[in-house]
Length: 168
Image (tube, rainbow, N blue to C red):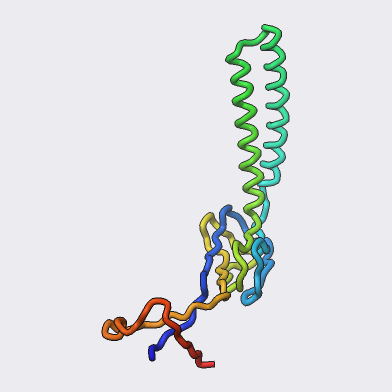
């Protein structure tokens, strides 16, 4: 006979990936969560403008790249200018992807199915990158953790059946 405690099968601490003010809380403590369910939303602020700017820059770089290709094929532009236009296009594509990711990261979502155990943020709180937003625990299955003395550990066999009783 040994004493122990129950623990969640796993616990995941969610952290902010972008900075900003918490604009909306979308899940309450103790509520069940499914993977991908929104927990909180961080204000978009200037990210929307940055996304629009990245899209406009990409459109411009596409036009410039096509013009450089056409001029290069007709012999009016160097291969260096064509390569430069291609590099600027690829840079604009990467900047657009970064702006899209920043927008996506404004919504903090549950990475696993589980129960929202802790949520230390409220509407109006300002979050920095890596600040804790919530903790989700997976209680299916529940682990039972026991302490066995050195003297009794030799009596245990890996894989042997056991019976666990909780107080309730």
